[in-house]
Image 1 (spheres, helix red, strand yellow):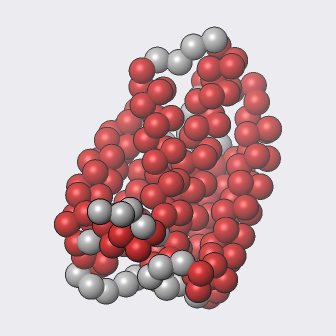
Image 2 (tube, rainbow, N blue to C red):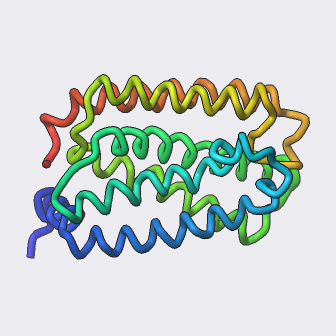
Image 3 (cartoon, rainbow, N blue to C red):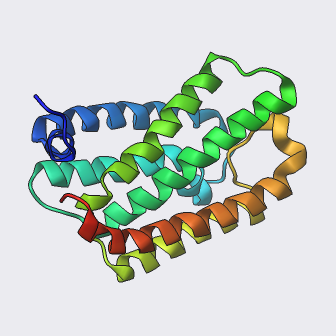
Length: 198
């Protein structure tokens, strides 16, 4: 059987594959919230929703997958998933590689985070052809994303990488521009859709 883009897209959008992807993302989301448990324990309740960035991103995608499996769509959740999965997928990889450069090593959990967060970003991009969000939805996602950056780097609720504590201002600057890039990715994806399978 010849492997074509149409065949790959058929597999990616098949209900059985979406169910498997949902299970994987759901397990990753649960683990992600568990991983943030120690930081949430020292976080004021008003900031709870803004601390576990990556698992919240994968939770958005879980909601997207659920409605896709049901044959429906949730445009606002789609754009929130795209922007945050790509953003925090890249962000976590940069932080872990930076930690490796700074300290000379990272443990197996660090490498696991590198692989899983890379996969987060890739899966969000793979489904660009299926998203139906509009510019209005992107505007809402942009407010959420940039507001989260303010909470993280103005109110000090960013994910804690102790080995990189001396670089917090640089990380905040990088994070802001990464958010802008991911918002523009969502904007440009609307134009790209007509060239992609759906």
